[in-house]
Length: 84
Image 1 (cartoon, rainbow, N blue to C red):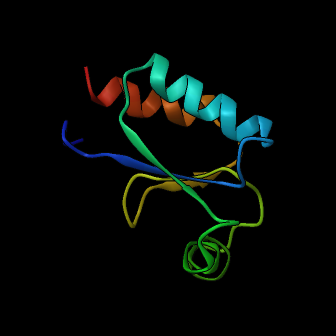
Image 2 (cartoon, rainbow, N blue to C red):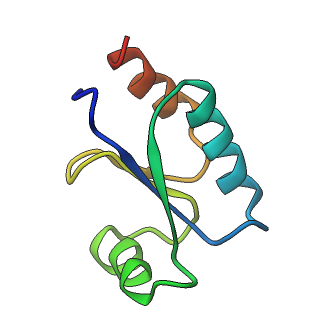
Image 3 (tube, one colour):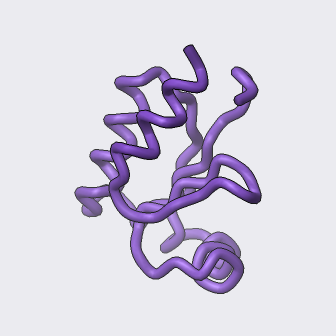
C-alpha cells in the first residue's frame, strides 16, 4: 500500500458510535484518513449507497477495489500491517 494514500471514512456524524470507534482505531494505527459526513454531502451519500451498495456506516474506502462498511478491526489491522 502506498504510504501516502489517505483513506476516506464516510460517516453519519458524531452520534455514530461505530464511526467514532473506526476513526479512533485508524488514529491509533497512524493510518491517515479524511472524514466525509454523508448527511451533509448528498453526492457522498449516493456514492456509498448506490455505487458501493452499502447501507451501514461507517464506510471506509481505501481505493476502488478495497472498501468495507461497519466497524471492522480486522480490515484496519490489515491496512496497518501493509504500512509497516
